[in-house]
Image (tube, rainbow, N blue to C red; front, side):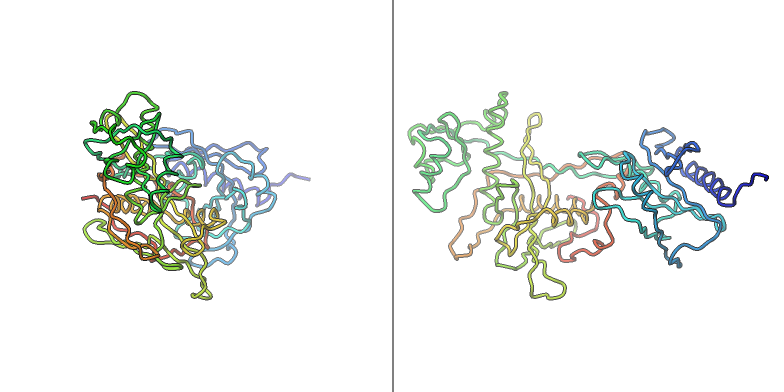
Length: 448
């Protein structure tokens, strides 16, 4: 009996050749695999201005003559992936995409196969307006090769540059500070201050029998823990830019203590996660913060009470804007590194027992503009001064001494634009909705 080539084999060959040509036309390299392949038809390599980048994507191709896809209409369709293919792709050390080719209308659609823990799904939802394999897909394809672990990596996209906002605030220091001898260590000094008052101040540091502070300890409650006749005012630069690494670390600890002190009216400190977060004013209530964003005033909910959709009276949890502070010395200047994040409570005051899933879900919704807005918001808060408020017991809270000043975060000009999708994990369909009252203003945030 004569050998025959089936139509499935033929359309498979046609599809692989067509997809290879399509990848080449949008600027990628594409290498087909041998006849022994069982689930990966080729490897696409990201190119930047004609130069290979060694960033690879595994490609599986499914071809058809002209059949409609499942539930296909003008906007999209679904496609069911075989379980065996999912199992084969799961251990891959490359991102995997599925490319669908239809010969009748010469259409090419693609979708990433999510292979992380708990992510793999057999049913893929394609949107015809977004998932076509053409030049508009270049940056989205490139971002698939961004390492999922680590910081600061991105794949250069194939379009023009942009301004990037660096999440570091230059710190202005007082010209002088105080050093004083003390008979106490750090812990004993804390105990002594609590004997003096229920609201001691901790914007000081003790090392080797010497207290450092920006305030004169003789005129404050800290007089109880120093030898008042052994207090000297010195040039801050003597300690701020000391060559000894231990002295630099000690000064960084002092800066963090001062920051916590001068933000104590509004921010609370979470010791476990080492972050500062906006405090709630009332149980189960949201709290707005108004500031000048660009050319107009903006407002965001820095404490957001999230309620059940079925019953708006039922409180689900409370989300607080927060940041992880870190002080770093670079050459002859100190910077505050601002890493925006969130803190979660059950009612505004009680720490949530399982915050990690909530944090992961919120982070998936944060994009470039949102993160940029948060850095600007934190700068506005830290630089605009602090107000006198009352606490929950209506006791007066003293205005904080504002020893640290914060300049705007610097901007740098990138030669290329970072793909928006590369900043965050792509949203799952159920994450499409955001809290409007918690969102940051979306116009371009240009510092004035």
